[in-house]
Amino acid sequence: MWILVGRGCGRRHAFALWATGATRGRLPGPRPAPTRGAAAESWATDRLYSSAHLKEKLDMSRFPVENIRNFSIIAHVDHGKSTLADRLLELTGTIDKTKNNKQVLDKLQVERERGITVKAQTASLFYNCEGKQYLLNLIDTPGHVDFSYEVSRSLSACQGVLLVVDANEGIQAQTVANFFLAFEAQLSVIPVINKIDLKNADPESVEKQIEKVFDIPGDECIKISAKLGTNVESVLQAVIERIPPPKVHRKNPLRALVFDSTFDQYRGVIANVALFDGVVSKRDKIVSAHTQKTYEVNEVGILNPNEQSTQKLYAGQVGYLIAGMKDVTEAQIGDTLYLHKQPVEPLPGFKSAKPMVFAGVYPVDQSEYNNLKSAIEKLTLNDSSVTVHRDSSLALGAGWRLGFLGLLHMEVFNQRLEQEYNASVILTTPTVPYKAVLSSAKLIKEYREKEITIINPAQFPDKSKVTAYLEPVVLGTIITPDEYTGKIMVLCQARRAVQKNMMFIDENRVMLKYLFPLNEIVVDFYDSLKSISSGYASFDYEDAGYQTAELVKMDILLNGNIVEELVTVVHNVKAYRKNVLAKCYGGDITRKMKLLKRQAEGKKKLRKIGNIEVPKEAFIKVLKTQSDK
Image (cartoon, rainbow, N blue to C red; front, side, top):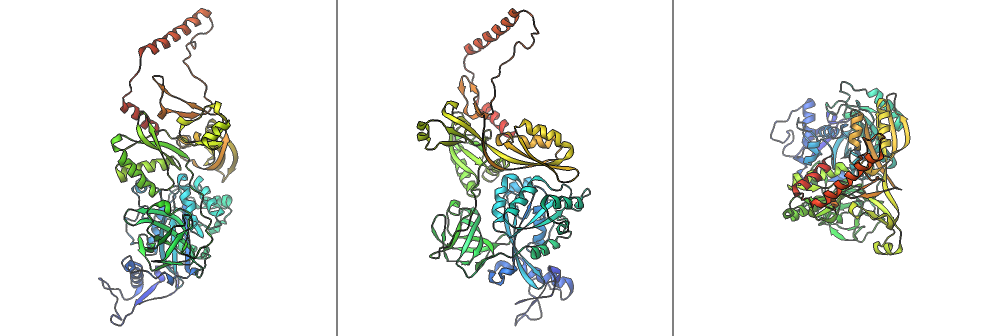
């Protein structure tokens, strides 16, 4: 048996003794055990919580509710979330301490290559503090605006967050957005100032920013270096002291929230669940509140960080559940699971993910259509936020119109298709979803609704059929050094943005809020912003609904025929032609008439020449060039 004694927090103060009738007085294992000092303490704790020891099924009843903390790490991109998660995993003995521990919870190849988190990941940590054994459920979240949906889902399973801020860069746009997600969810917020080891780090200035923008006292900030491990143990102690245990009831019937899911081709859907009431174990019959389907539980467990099956999961705990679901749509995000014949009031759940960008996806060769179809189906099983509609093109053949949460989401999805399924695709120019209010009863009857949504510009209705066009708008937040404010304001005005607020967060940095038409920022706004601010400005946005706008479909014709793949919707563009009179400064009117007549004859001659043949390779190159910009 294992006996835990001693005082204080962390592995330095934990001590364990192995005692059985046959082996009393010696410790088991392939290497001799040290008998005294810090080495014996470290060895015993590592032995207790090593992955080898966890091969046996864990008894999760050993962790009462008051000893559970569920928390998430949130931050702007590249402020050190994943590095902090690595150090926490090491400190608690969840993983061995090696030089190779980088982005341990980032399991996708695209995450490691880009150095970003795309998919929220969960890990259960065991930590000894003041003689008590705690279960800490950590959720590492993405930092980019495109994946804020992942963040909001993760927070539903938590009672507190670590808000990580770079000591060099300070508060950025996504820092603000993530803070308010946590604030609205009424979670405890622990500010952590990271990267204090950097040469230009200014933690005192960042402390003042946090106090001004978030109204959190400066003395509550924890200053660390996740890379070097400096003061990271203080973070674990703060999690225990400042984040409350979950408010749950284990004696009540089961109530479990599905906050994420993945698909395994052999075991089916693996649902990540947070238990708010009751207990669930293998062979229990559970019911989905969303579909009303009944399933038998095949396996329950925790992520440590890999799957570790347990005997049961109890209210207050976070883990996974496998119950023979064959499709991710059966494990609806935000669904409530309960025991058969013991119905409960469903939990609030989430708003469904709302696509912000649409693009056509086609195979480079139509012979690869079925392979690409299979790849998209498998990938969307693990990314339910992507919407799929069948589409076809005269030039490109059969394909799909996919909806994404943003441009980075689209790029990541495309990269995963190539890396994980060896699929090569053509992406058309990304567009945003517009709306049109129909004008006649006949059209309303045809479309079965008065207000229609258009996700393909080629289907944009003529102005004679509508009373108004609506375009999506977003509330954008820009944080920048003061010296670039003027240039950024000019950029925003050129993109039809309306200023809503401006605030200095310290003596050198400004936070601007603008209402943007989504189509003005979806392609190259971020690149332009980074360019004029020398890379120092950060940008984040949130959905702000729709507004009326003067919109028109811009067709591109080839040989007199509309090329659907190049059709775009633009804001009130006037007709253009070459100005042959540009060089005429006064003079006889006959000179101007001759130039105009020559222009007309040139157009007439062009129409007589005949059709132009464009090779498919050239057409594909045009589309790829557009999507790369």
